[in-house]
Image 1 (cartoon, rainbow, N blue to C red):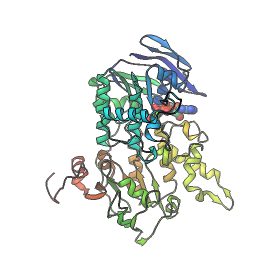
Image 2 (spheres, rainbow, N blue to C red; image 1 turned 135 degrees about the vertical axis):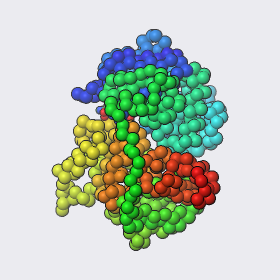
Image 3 (cartoon, protein in one colour; image 1 turned 120 degrees about the vertical axis):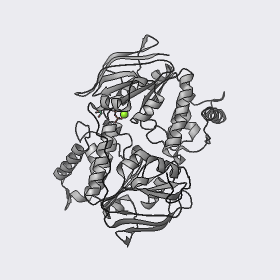
Image 4 (cartoon, helix red, strand yellow; image 1 turned 180 degrees about the vertical axis):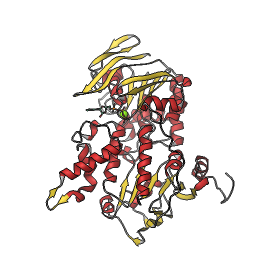
Length: 500
Ligand SMILES: Nc1ncnc2c1ncn2[C@@H]1O[C@H](COP(=O)(O)OP(=O)(O)OP(=O)(O)O)[C@@H](O)[C@H]1O
Ligand SMILES: [Mg+2]
């Protein structure tokens, strides 16, 4: 099946988001759709997926013009859309989610759960995933939720699959699994449109690309003819400084110490300390337990044993807002589920964690609130019309920046960031790294949780590597390179002082 979008234009109010965009995908082609945060990628795919309609332009399937008035129209034509923000219902089982709106029924009209479970199992087998279809979706972590979404599209036998940033919350082994699945599909003639900010993986998996900038196509072609640096250049319109080498930090006094933390399930006997003026990385692969550890510390996860010290004094947090009061801010992973309030405006979301700062007797100092937010928005280059718009009007990466500004605004002494560059574009990533470095230079102890070794090496002064819930090593100085981190993260025992 060949899908073509021709000369698509779309505005929201006065803002033109797409301006004459054309894109086509052949059967079996894996086509990368690239661009900065807010360039218009999701909007274009929302049009192809029938979620919204274009103001002008047309869509043709195998040369014939088609009109999509709803996602169902698009799906019936053979186009499945895996959205940037996951769309599963937590309270339902996996198999129920797989069949939402298309439930299988018995002759008597009752739901045929057995058949739905069986069909889900078959799809998982085809993809090589061992997951119990009857588990509630709530019990899955984000990466498995992603895999369920991909399986759902597979099960619908789509001829064209749109994947809007499917890999942002996945770790290396899972990404490899998803990629091998994509290669199989492409060999079976399925066309795929793949959106990602990770240019390395784009060159790895895609055969062709289209780059959008400010709603226009600025480059397109075959990936074999282009380099990572060229793609980045097309996206942002200028060369990206490659961070350079890290300056050695002058470590200040201990700000946060964790001693013997364990929940008897995801992590055991974890001890480490974070100091003022340093960026401490905590890394590992899926199942390393780092996110669970911090959820427990901030009382948002399972209860755990262990002690916590802030600036040398034993402390506990009763919630994330209690932690903020004590000078410790925490940005959890998975923006949509844990970090944004969808019904609130951008400004409301950004100042949610620091309202105490603006309280004057029984008033809120709205002027100061707005001024602080505008400063952060400028520093983080948040692309928006007005702070009074709903946060859901922003592109995915810009929502992530608002969440970051929310925690920066609490002016913490210790800042914990889980997966801070999730979904942000190459240029903005570097800006976020610079902000982290500046914060550390101003005396903040920053802890960055990430499974991207490259990110850890770029931004951290020192990193702790976890494997299956335990700390297996600490790297700093010349030891802190991607190779060493990967060896530790995969459970290899490395003697101290051994050559890498
Ligand atoms: N419903 C809406 N109302 C108003 N503006 C919107 C709406 N949806 C998107 N926009 C705006 O359109 C622009 C493009 O957004 P889009 O989500 O397509 O970006 P994107 O390329 O997918 O970015 P990202 O990489 O951050 O996901 C953004 O500036 C966004 O704020
Ligand atoms: Mg998007």
